[in-house]
Image (cartoon, rainbow, N blue to C red; front, side):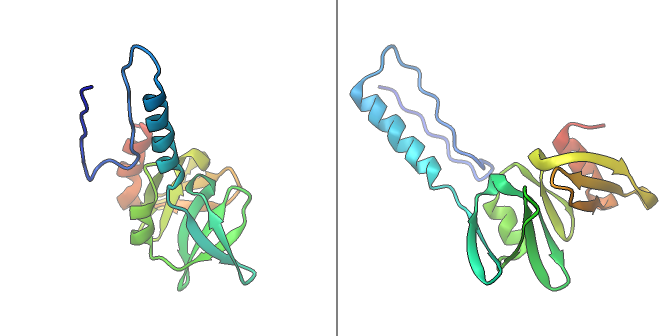
Length: 149
């Protein structure tokens, strides 16, 4: 069997493609092992009401600084305090997340809509109702990431 492996720092989500003529027990074991590896994907832990919750990245809608705190809102609008800085979260979270300002990251799959704001900003409304602004300096990268012009 020919096997190729490519390692890249740009790869945020591992992917395996198998070209096989028939399923064997060994290949089924390898697939199972790879799927378990993906199940060990990182989660973010946040504190709410003095309890620590483990939040899967796909449930996070928005992460931002509020005063001196780093908080995240999930898809049900629950607010959690985080102990990681934004740049640390940016490294943990996958390509579903994009920075919209110096103080916020959003899950692009949780965006409801975007509206033009004042002074060149854009207001971002998440599916859970939480809003934030895309600053002018991050607007171009945001639009490119979403394929907008």
